[in-house]
Image (cartoon, rainbow, N blue to C red; front, side, top):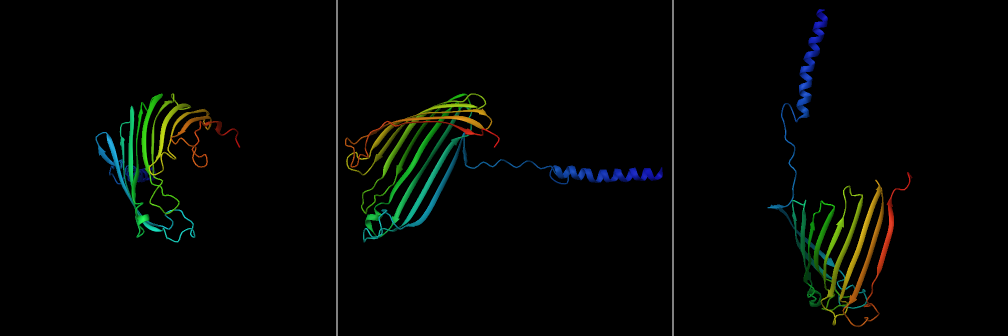
Length: 266
């Protein structure tokens, strides 16, 4: 009986010595209670918005500024390039009813060359856009958007003229996505303007209407039927058809229907 009492006492001592240590380690140390790590949120908090400023800097060398063949011209058109890209994104934090996003960036490009024709292509481009979606978490939502881009493009011969373009898109979408997300239908309209800044008269300038209907039905967990319809009404502002018929108005219609996912086990 004495041995049994000693054995029970020994087991009790082990239990009291070991179990509290394990429990203490589970909560963060020897009896030390630790709080969970704070969620890291990048950006600058400004009321109900979050700002994300950025800046990029690139230095390089362009051996063929005008995309010419090596033996086409004797004048070298290579140059050192410096590109500075400041950017800013603004988004709202509370997106249950309204989801807002603004993003913009500038492309400040300089050609560091003794060739005045090359150096004169130093310019500033960039892009800015706004996207607003109402009732984003509901079964029916409306999205409005606007985006403008100034694209810097050079010609394929050594000249101070360019193929810089101003592109603008304004549009809206009506999205139907009932509870569960198995079915989704979206009607979309966009108006595009694609205008050159340094061409004769209106050569190459294009405006067009873009209408789309997109849908998906996930009738199995990993299988869905897809629908994608797009219709464009393209109108070139130049009255002629261009040099090779490249400025021909058109009304292309594209329809795609398919299935994505698993059909059988293999």
